[in-house]
Amino acid sequence: MLHSFAVRLSIGCQFRIARCDLMNVISEPVADGATLRRLCRQMEGASHIALDTEFTRIRTYYPCLELIQFATHDLIFCVDASCDLDLSILSSIMQSANSTFVFYAGDQDLEVLELNDLIPRQICDAQIAAQICGATKLSYQRLVKQYLDVSLPKDLTTSNWSRRPISAQQIRYALDDVRYVLPLFYRLQEKLAKLGRLSWLEEENARLLELPRGDQSIAQSWKNFGGGAGFSVAEQHIVKELLTWREQRAKSINWPRQWVLSNQQIRDLVTRQPASRDQVAKLIGIKRRPAPAWVSKLHRIINSTPRNNLTPVWSLPPRLNDSDKALVKRILTCVYRIAEQHNIPGSLLCTRQEASDTVRGKMSARMLQGWRQDIVGAALQPLLKQIQR
Image (cartoon, rainbow, N blue to C red; front, side, top):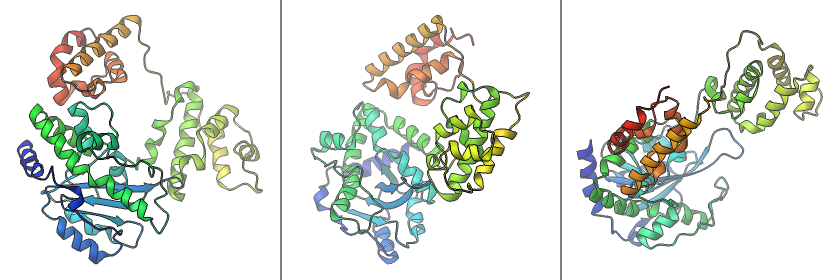
């Protein structure tokens, strides 16, 4: 695997000084299948393809894909995903074993692509490459300026990408988001090769593909709720049921969760426990009469959830005593010292939360796996032996 990655590196570096102003730029968003197929054929065989997306999700549960931008060393274009296009045209090239798709901070892009069945087979994130190179300030504009001496505008970072027609200024901004990704990435790859860290990047890319994203199951939706441990055990079960109901309804009508029922409304319902359907409606601000039928469902959840012989849904992690806190500090001191020796951010190896969880006995922190384990494992062994939990 590493060998193939190194081969792609040598191919990619041939183009790292390519002039972006000599690219074949398609200045209008692609809106028809014939053009998209033609451009896909032009991208075939490219070792690396920069990829970015623009999407909206202010008024919806699911992110709405608006634009998909692509760039090779000699071609750059964007696809208007809001048109009646068969996006499966992209699948063959995105599943090619010959092409690696390069993102910059691609977590959210991967989420929206996954919802549209467009996850590439091979990916790489240039922001992660920058971190492994030692960068601590990771904005795309900053790194493009640092490595390529190009100044990029920031004035459209909150643009409304659902509005049509898309303005020429928006198109320029969207294309700039991929125009410099490959030249930047090749510079970072070259630096990683000199540092002997290409395998680190490959490991991080594989991990990025495996991360759970986006469309979580309804049954698990309650897990991300903050503050659940502050309720009584009986109240926790009501909160869980309300969160599960909210997730199901938000998905079914494609509304943001907070539009269906806000976290504060859930807290109010649980702590005040209105005794009637009308009281439920009043508490959550429903003024029309009769109240919607789903208000009755909330009333039933509040008043029919079992209250006896229950186990906690949420619980606070065990408190760290003074000895534990001292051990967390020693772990972080050790890890950050090693990070400084390698000129990488300490948080790339271990966060305070991960160190605390490790002291509590949760031996699954990133610092105990893969390349991180290789560089910090031996130094941490004497400290890890002190963990008694």
